[in-house]
Amino acid sequence: MAKVAGQHAKIINLEIQGVKELQRKLDALDKNVGKKIVRKALGKGIALIRKEAKAEERPRRRTGGLQRAIASKVKIYRRGATWAGVGVDAKKQFTDNAGRRYVPAKIAHLVEKGTRPHSILKGARTRIGRRYSRAKSLANMIGAKLRWAAGKRPQWHPGSRPYPWLNPAFLRTRERALAIIAAELRAGIEAMAKAT
Image (cartoon, rainbow, N blue to C red):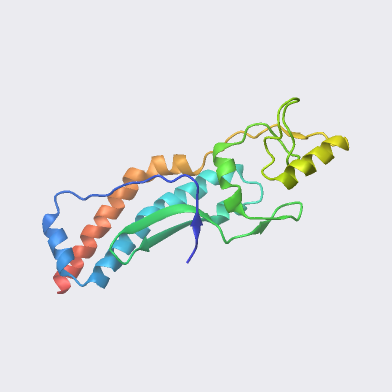
C-alpha cells in the first residue's frame, strides 16, 4: 500500500443524515462486511479528488514526477475510525532532466505553496551583523564562519511562485466526492441488507 505524505491536510467529517435505518442495518451486518463497504465508498470518493489533482498538476509539470506520484489511500483502524487521503506517495523516486534523482513528496509542498527568497549556502547568515540564524548546530555555525571567511558569500535563490494543484482540486470536487461516498454507502448497505 502506498504511504501518502503531506504537510497540510483538509479534514471532512461525513455524516449521512436521514439514513438511521441504514445505520441500523450496517450495525447489524458483519463488521468485516461493513468495513469493506466503507472502504469501497471512500475509495471511489477520493479517487475523484486524486484524478482532479493529477489533471490540475499536468499543465505545469517539467518531468511529470509529481503528477505520477499523486496517490490516495484509505485506512480503517481496528477501533472503527476511518481515514482517507490524497497526497504524494513518499516512496516514489524519479529522475529529472539533468539526471538527478528526487522524491516528489519532498517538493510537493514547495510547488503548492511556493517559496520566498532564501540563501542557498548552508548555515549562511542572511544579513551583516545578524547571528548565524540558519546554523542549527555548533558544527554548522563553525562551517558557516569558515566558508564566510574563505570568501564564499551566500548565494540567493529568488524564490518561486506557488502553483497550487491539490487545494484547488479538493475545493472543486469535495461536494461531488461526498455525494459519491454517500451514494456508495447507501447502495452497499442496501445490497448487503437484501442479501441477508
